[in-house]
Length: 382
Image (cartoon, one colour):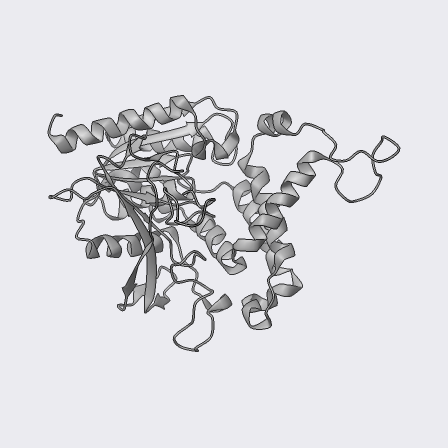
């Protein structure tokens, strides 16, 4: 069982419309969130954890009666862990457009009385951050001790430092980037096309037809999952192992499953198609593609980060080819150019992009040490 024990999600309703970057607005929306630990008297120990693509507000702990419900970053967040909930008040917020509680395509559109479906407006990383800031306002938190995230969550943390420089003292960006490469955008589009071309997608309004575009979701997840693993990790786990050897003791000479890696990817795809919403997948991958805060400054990342005030911790992993260490170094160099305080860790780990979610002693110890400094600031010992 998680060391945090049982936790419960909460919801917050917002009647005031949220103006989105696209020019559209969202009204009467709801955000689902969870908190862990205790907020101190001056509210100086709050840490916001932003989630990645298929994660949610459920960062740590478990749900009572659901034995396989451990939070997605439970190895990072909890009593005595790297982000110690005996010291910090940690908040996880489910992003708009998600399928895990916050208002998204599956919810009722107040204008039509039907599910939003494809009519749900396109959202961006900056839109999510603006919504998170509103929730923090309602909790009376005017400044976070830190905003933290990995992958897409790291993009949100970086956006926080740019959009609300006075509202966070530390920015923790792990296995992330200031913009996607053309290759990353290409992978995302292939995944989206798999969904869009599924006959059961019905232009995004598949809810009314009582179906789910499972084939599209399966392929989308398989494509995505390939990019989260390193070649070395795949080789070690699966190699060229055969799943079931034919009676002849050779290949099956067909188009079914021959190799273990095929079986694994299909399993991951099947599982994903059972719980994730197709419209949400489209929205989130497009938000990934659109994130490029330096675009407003002619691609000059240093100029983009000139207004930041936070201290930064960045970490990358050597075998992460989706968000490679080069991308983190670009952020580090831009911050150094602005004379910001930066701590950077490049960790030699074999697990590819997924390394940010896994238990690596060096990685966890570095995060723990950094939050030790954050805590000393709160305690007034630095």
